[in-house]
Image (cartoon, rainbow, N blue to C red):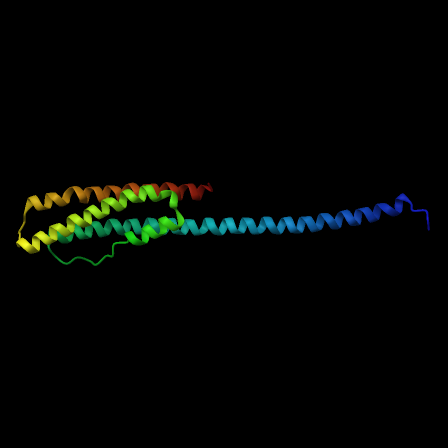
Length: 167
């Protein structure tokens, strides 16, 4: 019993080594699988939010044009909600690195809304008819908010492309 031969130890070493490798492999494999699943879920979530933001930006552009058409034609147009608040929420929660670009859109949107409000106020207070001077006051804010919307839309498109490429 005192003589342990090398041929008796080799199967024991192989068994212990195999057990250790299987345990480490199982733990490491599970860890890597969970980490990649979490990354994939996060990436998918951001892609969906980018897509939603893109659609909301298109709706925002429709809203701007709709409001301007209502003023010019003096008729009731399709009711479209301004989605700027929803866009702000998505940007702040999911894409904080885009806050600066969004701030430019938000400022131009506020200037347009204020100019639109003043136009309508003057229209109601003064019962003005087709006053070209008042329309001209709306033109620049209108152009700026359209331009800002398009610039931010392009920024979201770039970000979307990067996510699709896997970066």
